[in-house]
Image (cartoon, rainbow, N blue to C red):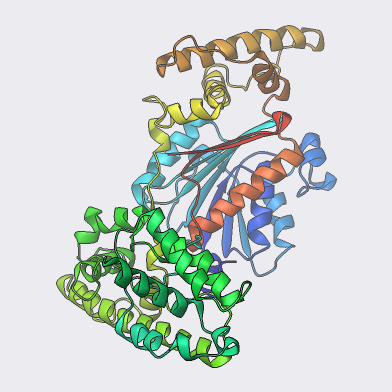
Length: 511
């Protein structure tokens, strides 16, 4: 999935996990198996009888021992190439972020998350937090800046049909469709058919092949159908299907434009990352007479019905174009690195090649800071409301306030609470938790807030205990997001994910 470069990044990674609960174990399981380089578990908790029932990475013989050491020992048995380390201290006291690739905070108090989150934010270290209260869970991510070259997004083939470059134009002109018999015509690549049809349409209409309306593209589609020797010819059917996407003006995506217009893409000094040096070069490339507002070509074309020689020749033309574009961008990059007083080979040839192949899929993620949540209304509040998970979010924050006030989560008995008094305490905890959540929602600008009693009851009933099956699902998502952030491949979550397994709800709230 993440190929050689991604695997190498994963094997270099050093991940710190705060907490050693079931959620932490399940998250780490999905990182140890693919070969994370090193992980450090920070916790001072001891293994309890309850842990043995819910955490598959502790044994009955571990009861009374350090839970961090127990899960590290058992996790490392799954992959001896992974180095694991346990730090037996309270997560709130952990301070060493040197050479850390990413921090995961599992079931940690909001106060701890805010304190460490601010330090991670300052160092631009990605941080993922996850909490699980019974059937309900939340995942939050925070990273000041995260750049992605290999986003693996779905993009339409870049065929340059409406404005063929010189070599493609010569290739298309080498076909005389009227002189071909039905057998040879059935093996003409659909790219050639579209170029011929677009040229014919423009000549008949006396118009340029720019800014075509849907009606005009339908006219080209009709010409393609007329050119077909018979119904059902696969290459002509492929041309028909590609009319809407290939017979449109070339457009640089909003995601890429956001990068090209970012102030960082106009900066070049010794501290500038390779991504932004390349983005600076790309900005110049696009603005140049050669680039003419287009991205470097990737050299890739889709499979299509054609004879082998025709397809190989066409593929060679696009690959040659990609090499020419890469050479032009490399010249732009050379000017950028010279301005930054860096060596000409500061950015490797491999990085340049990967960047050019994925230039149309670049992504930039800047999330909201977790440590600001206690001071102001959540920046995603309106989106949380629209997704119907504002009450879940408010209850997680209210549980944090409750913990700071009482030193325990709602639903967990006080030391002096007897078995007969537990029901009364839970009722009192539920009333207080709901009141805190309502107050928070009111402060965030929500008029007449309501919090469902069933949600409050689940938070109190669970006592913030983690169910293994829910923790396994959440841990899988946490690991997935971790791998995205470490490998700089695929687009990570930018916001908050709320999971309510009792109500079959999963909402990924985006910034």
